[in-house]
Image (cartoon, rainbow over all chains, first blue to last red; front, side):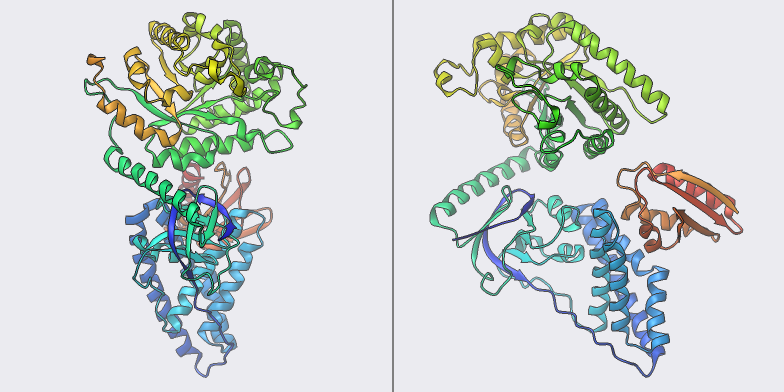
Amino acid sequence: MLTYQGKSVFGGIAIGKIRVYRKNAQTVKRVRVEDPQREMERFLAAKETAAAQLKSLYDKACREVGEDNAAIFEIHQMMLDDADYLESIENIIKNQSLGAEYAVAATGENFAQMFASMDDAYMQARAADVKDISERLLRILSGREEEQDGGGEPMILAAEDLAPSETVQLDKSKVLAFVTVKGSANSHTAILARTMNIPAIIGADLPLTDESDGKTAVVDGFSGKIYVDPEPELLKEMQARLAQEKEKKRLLQTLKGKENVTLDGKRIQVYANIGNSRDLALVLSNDAGGIGLFRSEFLYLERDTFPTEEEQFVIYKQVAETMAGKKVIIRTLDIGADKQADYFGLAHEENPAMGLRAIRLCLTRPEIFKTQLRALFRAAAFGNLSVMYPMITSVAEMRKIQAVVQQVTEELTADGVPFMVPEQGIMIETPAAVMISDLLAKEAAFFSIGTNDLSQYTMAIDRQNPSLDDFFEPHSEAVLRMIQMTVENGHKEGIWVGICGELGADLDLTQTFLKMGVDELSVSPGRVLPLRQVIRQTDTRKL
Amino acid sequence: MKEFTYTITDPLGVHARPAGMLVKEAGKFTSKITLSKDGKSGDAKRIFAVMGLGVKCGETLTVTAEGEDEEAAAAALEEFLKNNL
């Protein structure tokens, strides 16, 4: 067995034979022509054919991957019609009496070079688009057919890189996974693979040789690994995971788009928890109603300096826009001595779980907090964004937060940038917050119960310490009563109450939570549909 | 000649899709429409020229329109930029 590694762009498991995809080598000779006029006519005819092909590709892509993703083929049509591009080709043919193939290849190379030399990764990736249209023209000029999928069984497609047009043209029922050696996360192939729900790995070190062609392989789109000639044990494990995924897909087919409503008509929101904007695709593919907990820590970790307001804004806005009007609840920075980046310069603590973390850190270092709030408030103008504050233990903390919110609002107004003060909620994760939830409910638009910390603080059990496992009760009555109390106090003030900790995904407790009147459960994306299934089978009158 | 400036607010800058839409919008007018940024300029009706300017978020574009329908062209492009970029 040989193992290769790449970067995952879309999760999923695929097991099958590898097919190495090779582009027809386009060697173009610099030939002089007798009759440039005739050569120009050949080019114009090829251009017309190319435009027609792009038009039908656009239509095909619209049907398969939606108008937004298909737009690239409209751009290709415009590139093909671009006056600078055409003038350059015409010049080479007419003034230098060179063949149409050479004129197209040289012009394509020049324009691709222009993009490749730009100082922005997105624009650099556009060089592939220019090459794609030039190759299309060359193919037509040379009278070669486009490479089509040669029937047969579904395969794992391995290629140097795939142009967007190649990706769309493939028969999707014949592709188990994409593996490319090149490609960026910005490439259209990566975007299309995500939309088509096909496991995809880019930047893989898999050799594209005859050796690889036809070999059995496992593609693990979650870890970015490719196993060629897998060992029986691994194969068995992967087959089991594949079966799980199929089950998920089946659930998806029967439950996607369905409401989270009990047999007796009780409704509950089911949202997803995520820790990185990369997980957005999972949120959508699992049909979550929104994002109930977006952990903002990833923006701060694995780097050497604080993320700027602009960096944060771009990501929050992207999340809000991608969710297109669905609720996105972003938790402000929850970092402390146990989970931190060096540049925070936090002192070592004996008991970090009870230390300077989360909102305590934010109120101690308001400059960090203000930058995040500015970015969040600006992004709130672009979607249905809410903010929630972690580790609250007193009303006084909420008042302090409101003073910072007030400052941020005034500063943003003075700066004249568009912004909105989003809905603000409280994470209920300390016994203190539960005990005064009647008071806190007057200070917030919603509550979200973080059951992991709440359990640890209520039972005084460190979840990282395995010697305490015997003492840990997953369905602790004490914690359940805390939840009940929070829900009741929230509802008395007319605010909604959700659960975003692990207990929320515990299917044995779903009925208990429905009975308590919990308004929302936020779980990891893969748990959304199983939860929906239980909810739809429950009749709360019989509980 | 009509001229105005606009600062890009889209975090991706003038990326492929809005560039394409801008070229289409400019194509509706007979006036010559030019985009410029930091001394570089390009014809707004040519997609490679528009994308080649590499206009990023926060940068300011100067748009000029010259011709019979310059009033309408400038107004339409300003409206387009506000709505899309």
